[in-house]
Image (cartoon, rainbow, N blue to C red; front, side, top):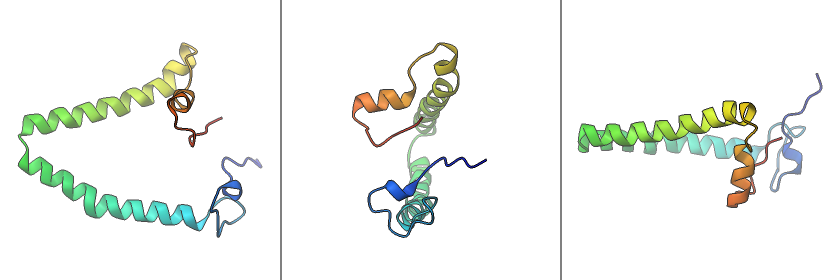
Length: 102
């Protein structure tokens, strides 16, 4: 279909890119962040779950899940049904200029 959803060839520090689809920088960032998730963040969450009261841990967990779920519902439904601005425009107004969605 000749659609190119992303292009790493125009990124800063895009060394080692393969036709703009993959670049070593992004692969390394995803790899390192996944290792941090597996070896630091998940064990820390288990540690918190053991040390905290169950009620407090569930309140924090449900709150984070509700925030993520609301963001997804807003982006998938509300922006289309009620013609509201997309989250990327709101993020851009807040100063997060690196996010770009068409």
